[in-house]
Length: 335
Image (cartoon, rainbow, N blue to C red; front, side, top):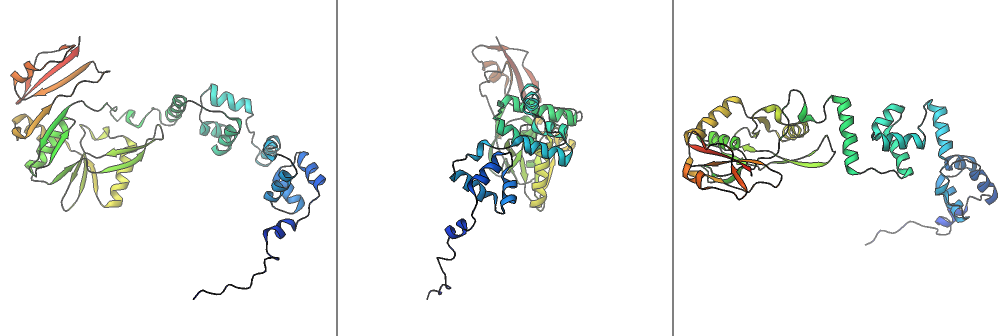
């Protein structure tokens, strides 16, 4: 059974009655508005809301969008806060010619960055993508003394992802393809320690501190056990960029997981196992073609005959084939 509705008088509470309840003189309102008074002043003067004034003016044929009274607002801001708002020419000079971002301009003027951003939107100023990145880099440089977290004096610079591809089958029967010898050596170390692990299973969303883009950080190894660990394989723990590390540590703390890099002892033991030929039959070196912008590449082989027979059209041998442990190294360059 439906609940009965309360008594409702449609003639008393219609929106039309509420709207028409306020009687405003057309000529008085138009004259007051065109005299330079913005909508908030008009609303206070006639005792109604800004939306009512706007509806009335538009019904009388006045386009309120072209009367933004920016000069009046700027003057009031100067009087109330004692701060000078940059003019349109000054904003165009700082934002376009000098390629400064909105936060830098706002800090120089002592204003909130949203004030400058709104002014730029009204002026219709737009930057190219490259200009935006350059301005953000210059701001980061002024604040920290270097352009990117990976360029910190105590941090090694970020490098491109390696072109090495190595297929490996673990003791648990897991087949994975590594992108560096560091990952392969650490997997050998984990298998000799009889540790259960997974490769590139955890993905973390983070915001790039340089460009502001949303990116995905894939953690190298997930170690299973009483204490789950997320391990990033790096020759140096400081190579992990600051933006990735902050989001990974926060996510690990929420999940009750330990996030860390590899230790020097783990790296040395893993590299010793790789050169000794541990589980060599489960390792297969893949040979992807080099990138178009690449002029030098290094390949790894299980035998010297296999290294001699491998060739790439348009490439020549750079140095002699060298042996490191039980694997052979061949470096090639473009002709």
